[in-house]
Image (cartoon, rainbow, N blue to C red; front, side, top):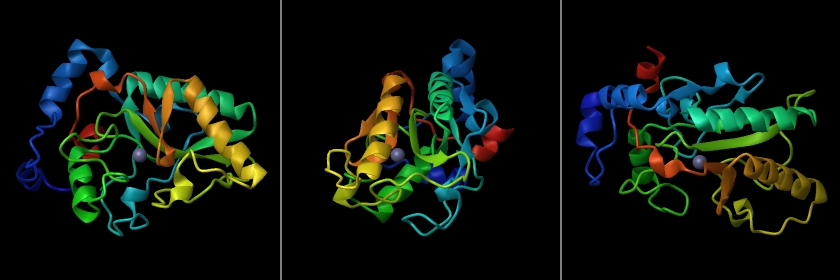
Length: 215
Ligand SMILES: [Zn+2]
């Protein structure tokens, strides 16, 4: 994770994200603002936090810890979605959830196409703790269900509007989108794995490291 001093120099896009002390005050005033540890909160959820490894499009380790956090109502909705998937022998695997603003700046500086990476002028819904990158797994085998592309593919096949000829892949994509939609999430138009929580507007862009949230 970027150090605080390096981070401060990075606020050059006209957006001043909320940092730890203001975040703590906001949670005192409004409990829905709390970032919840999804691994602790949702039984059986699996993490594969790619930005805590070099297995991501930047080919660098961006996060110091492999953690998934989301704001409280987002975590609750995701818990309900997981319970529905589990009835079908399926579980959720998370690739990314809350993402500190500094990471969004870094992604933009690596790959300046805002179709695929968030603009640092506005921040990402991940920065607000209101977006989840995920896929589905078979609970018996632990294997991912087949989807149109890999996570973070920049191909057109990743768009939820692109037709899929394989009926099984179509079924899997339809399932993740329909169940997530039922629990208040909207799929991104160029990424089948990215889900925004409806009502994200009330949550501020944050720049707090996982290390600080763990304390
Ligand atoms: Zn995403």
